Image (tube, rainbow, N blue to C red; front, side, top):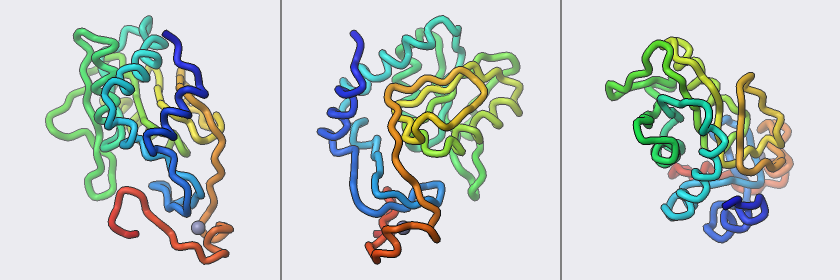
Amino acid sequence: MVIKAEEIMRKFEEAGAVQKGHFKLTTGLHSDTYIQCAQVMQYPDFMDNLCSELGKRFRGDDIDVIVGPAVGAIIMAHVMARVLGPWVRAVFTERENGKMTLRRSFMIKEGEKVLVVEDVITTGSSAREVIDIVNSRKGKVVGVGALIDRSGGRVDFGVKTEKLLTIDIKNYLPEECPLCKKGIPLVKPGSHEV
Ligand SMILES: [Zn+2]
């Protein structure tokens, strides 16, 4: 089954994952749209469908480990690993004092083929930090997979990159943000700073 891009967008909207307002993104940039993938991850069947579709594109790549940045990619890595299984591992990185790290005794061994996943690509900076960790462990990053690329396809990781949906959502530097100029209250999604 092939899921069409319009279908994915509609489902994301139905699930309440596409939010409008004035948001401070993890990168510090501001935007009028926020994609809250956690809303989609509430529905395991839908996640299975999405990850089956994305996983197909990496089936020939002989993946050993899937890794993505917490919290967003934890569920995604898990579902993707099941799609690409049976012995594909799912691990995740997390921030410790602001620095992306691999904790919890998770291992990436020398020469292992690694697929980096991220639910939403905005600037790609988190995925790049994950790639750096894999490289430092001498793993081989064979690709990056994302549910949504909201950069309009402008992010280049230098490896095979597959995403289910590419959209172009404008981000603003805080000092240039038109929403700030209009005095619209800024919301940091996923935090209590509302
Ligand atoms: Zn703003």
